Image (tube, rainbow, N blue to C red; front, side, top):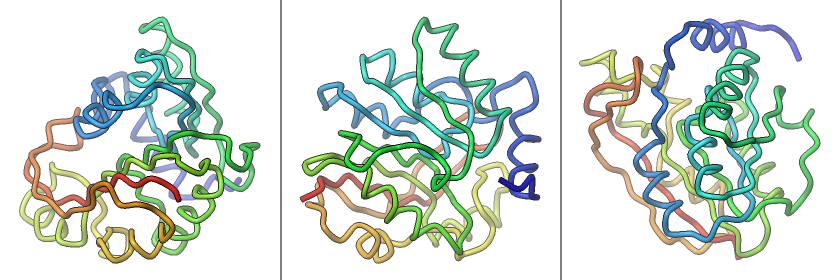
Length: 208
C-alpha cells in the first residue's frame, strides 16, 4: 500500500490525542444496531473505532479496516478502555483476508472512499455479506456541498463525486430489499470534525 496523500491525510487527522469524531457511536448506527441480534459485522473505513467498539459492547463479533495505522492505534486503545476486542486490519480492501459471505452485517458510516473507487468498493463489500445480511449506511449526500460551503465545521468531502445520491446507492446495491433509503438534513455533533447541519443519505438494506 502506498503512503499517498490520502493515507497521510487520515494518519495526520488521527494522530492527535483527542478523537477526531468523538468516542460515542454515530446516532443512526446506534439506532439500527439496537434493532438487530448481534452476530458478525464489518466496519469499513472505521477510523478511530467509535462505531466498531460500540457494536462490540452490544455483543457483536466485530471486524474493521482502514488505511490509517493511527486510526487503528486509537481504536485498539478505545477497545481496551471499553473491555472489548475487535479484529482491526490496516490496508486497502483487496489486500485484506476477508472471506465471501463472512458477515451478517456491514456498517458504512461516513465511509467516503475516493470517488474513482467508491462504487467498486461497495461491490466488493457486497460479496462479503451473507444472503439475508444487512447493510447500514450513513454518509454525506451530494446536496451536502451547499452545507459545507456555508459551514466547514460540518465536515465531509468538498468534491461532488465523493458524495452520494440515492440513485448511486440503488445502483451499487441492486439486489437488496430496501428497508430504508432517504436523503435527510440532520444535525451533527461528533467530535472535532462533524459539527452543524448537513445533508446525508441513510440506507438500510437486506441482501436478497
